[in-house]
Image 1 (cartoon, rainbow, N blue to C red):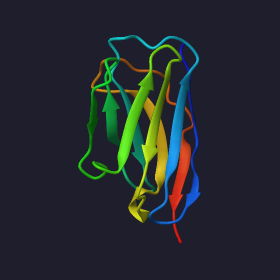
Image 2: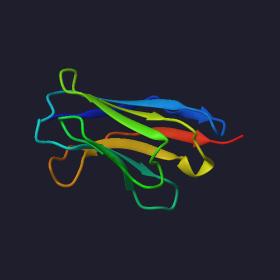
Image 3: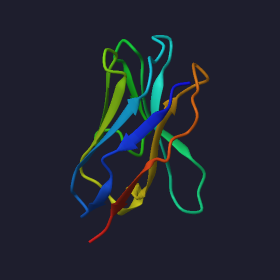
Image 4: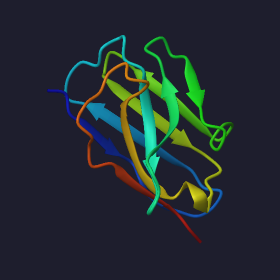
Length: 116
């Protein structure tokens, strides 16, 4: 069974940048739209960015223009470049399939904290 491991989080000041990575232990189906999700304390998990195997991205309005999702099908990895970070971006970030195109066990996620 494919397992997902997220990394790259940390503490950053407002306006700073981080790059998150998601590595799958096996092959991700080309039919799978992969996404980055986040969950802030006391809030529901939300989908912030998705990408098809062909490289077409889509973003939530809250991150549009600041975040960039990318995918390497050969390496079975998905990345999220986050720029101009805001305190409201603070959350645990996870990757997984999106829109019911596929689904894997949730990983532990990676904590992103934006604070001065």
